[in-house]
Amino acid sequence: MLPTNVPPTVIDGIVDRCRAADYPPAVTRLRSGWVVMGARQVFTGYCLLLPDPVVPHLNALPLDLRAQFQSDMAAVGDALLAVTAAVRINYAIFGNVDPALHAHIFPRHAAEPEATRTAQPWALDWNAAPVYSDAVHGELQRRLAAQLVAQQPR
Image (tube, rainbow, N blue to C red; front, side, top):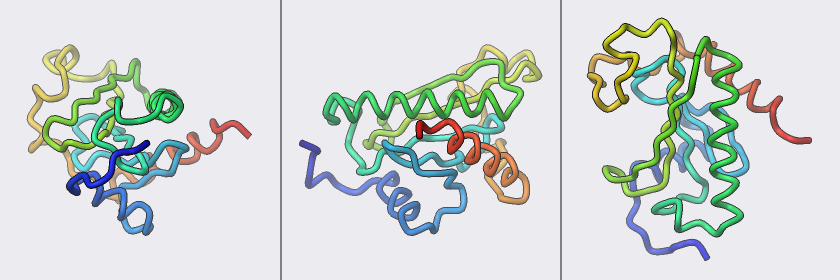
């Protein structure tokens, strides 16, 4: 059973906007939830997977939904590898700041500056990272959506 009576979070608000087709960084809906581009593109192609419905943490999901969320998270990584020049994907689930399940998915590139190449993303200056915009990131967003749709089992 999914938890109820949990206070709303930023993640709840974004999921509500995705459902209403009113969140420009939204990429697509997968079985477990929504793929969205990160508001700050600390690495080009940085995405999040947000569960729908929103739950407080991974362990709040029943086993089948937990497995689906993790499978979808890896599928986003596969799609990022296919549509970017990424050499690897970093995954992170914390929920300490916004206490709702969400997975961070970071494509890592060989062309990153030497100082960045081995740094974990939270060590970087997020305020200096480009803000998501359709003009800059929209083509990547559309290619990612197409790749995710193509990867889905029929």
